[in-house]
Amino acid sequence: MLRSQITGVGSYVPSRVVTNFDLEKMVDTSDEWITKRTGIKERHWAALGEAPSDMALQAANRALESAKLSKSQLDMIVYATLSPDHEFPGTGCFLQAKLDVPGIPALDIRQQCTGFLYALSIADQYIRNGMYRNILVIGTEMHSRGLDKTNRGRDVAVLFGDGAGAVVVRACEVVKPESDSYLFSTHLHADGRFAKELWVPAPGSALPDEERLSHAMLNENLHYAQMNGKRVFVSAVEKLMQVMGECMSANQVSTEKVDLFLLHQANLRINEAVAEHVKIPPEKVFNTIHKFGNTTAATIPLGMDEAIKAGVLKKGMLVMLAAFGSGFTWGSALLRF
Ligand code: ACO
Image (cartoon, rainbow, N blue to C red; front, side, top):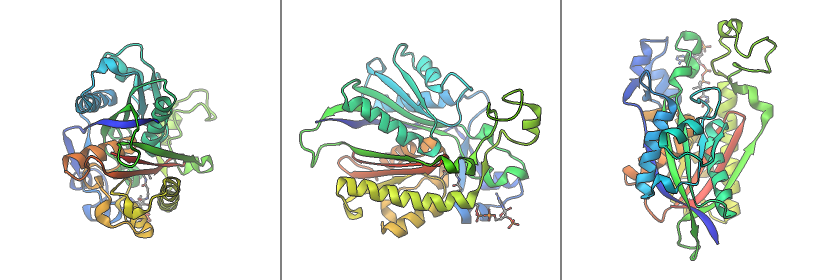
């Protein structure tokens, strides 16, 4: 049985730490408001001149090193982000050039907070059908350049941070399904009826304007995220529970059998509500939101790397991944690490 195995994990966050107290100096907010509603205490913001693909390169090199794989052995890059280096081409191409692996395909995934799971699922399909053996799957986000750091944008600005997380996915022959390390299944969903509950309208060719980006759009703040926070919160809890249930029943496992849950990091309260409803003991959910905020496509691989470093994620563990985000999109995956 040909399956995917995660053989390397790496991550990177920029060195600049921005605390809630730092944000208090920028907008009308407070450490108390942010902590109580989101669990976030600090996040990292990139330095001027640092590009998303620079962060991705650091995470990718660390993942390759941890996989003990030469970059020349990579067959493909799948790159998830909502904050690309440029409008086009995809940032996977910029990363590929920086990694110096010309020729291999580089695919960008635009599924926001669920981006890493979509990317992982795509890599898994290429591996299962035998087309590729070694794929770099990466989630990178540089939110700091796209936040409205005035009072008008304070509801969104306090939530997000910058970071990158990468995994190396390798083809493996599963001989003992009950003990081998491999990716069991992935489950993906989207409901575009809710696309405008969390979105960035501009630049956009669907807008009634001569240009995809105009001064009028900038004046209206259409280049910043517009979010219906309450709607996102409620749907996130509901869809995460559904898709985790779907994954457990597809693999005939119960929550007790899962050793660790690596859930998307949007809001600590979302994950606490999910854990309570699904009856997961809090110590089985590994959260990083207090130190990184929401790094969108990077939260899961970044969390995986942090969990390894903390000694929480160990070889042989049964791990569930789940995410929800703009689109709306949501998904889950189960693997033995
Ligand atoms: N600091 C202080 N006050 C603020 C801030 C801020 N940063 N932002 C908003 N407020 C004010 C509002 O203006 C409002 O004031 P009012 O009562 O005078 O009108 C008050 O705080 C309460 O605002 P609400 O929107 O009702 O606050 P809520 O309890 O819903 O919390 C939050 C807002 C934290 C955004 C919450 O809705 C949430 O987390 N939603 C999920 C959003 C999310 O996770 N998005 C991430 C992307 S998607 C994903 O990754 C799943």
